[in-house]
Length: 100
Image 1 (cartoon, rainbow, N blue to C red):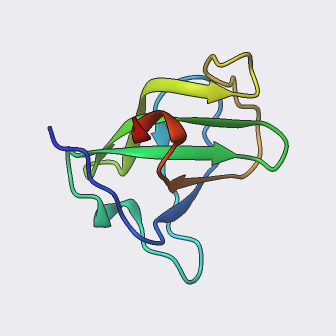
Image 2: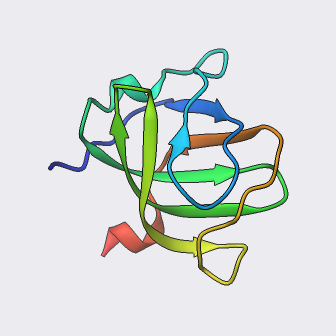
C-alpha cells in the first residue's frame, strides 16, 4: 500500500486506549482523512495538547478509522499512548524519521 501525504488533513477523535482511532470529522478549515484515500498509509501525529504520538498509520473509509501501525515517537517513552477520555486531534504530517 502506498504512503500518501495530504495537505491540511486534520480530524478529531474521542477514541480511548491504544488501538484503532475512530475519526469524528475534519477540523474547520481542514480536509478529512478521506483525502489520503481508503487503504492508504500516511504519517500522523495525534495530540490532546498534553500527550502526543507520531507514527505511520492506515486510513479506512468504512467506519472512518485510522490504525496506528507503527509508533515513531511519543510522550509515552515512544510507545503507543493510552488515550483517556476527551477530544484529541490527529493530522497528517511528515516526521523526521521519514526523511532519511
